[in-house]
Amino acid sequence: MALLDVRQLMAQGEDPFAAIMEAVSRLGPAESLELIAPLEPVPLYTVLAARGYGHRTEDLGGGDYRVIFTGSGGQAGD
Image (cartoon, rainbow, N blue to C red; front, top):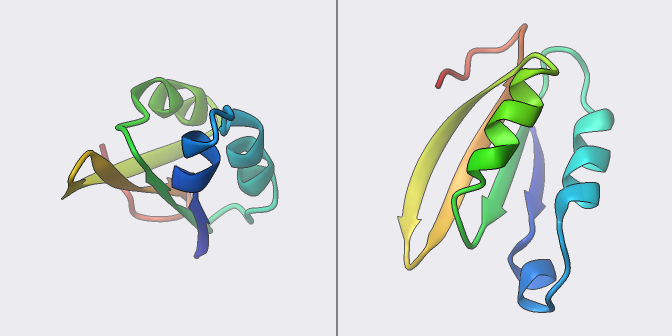
């Protein structure tokens, strides 16, 4: 499982979308991406679902979220 923590990037005012998509592009068909973000990335759910990724979201508290995106060969669910 790949890990991408975008909290620092977002704290600097940068949009993490390109970094997230780059990380996803490096995943194999059944591999997962663990994303840590300072907000729930709801729009990303649709973008990655169109690419065959399901997600499982966990509220870490304090505004932070952990989202596991898993390719169609994996087991993450909405």
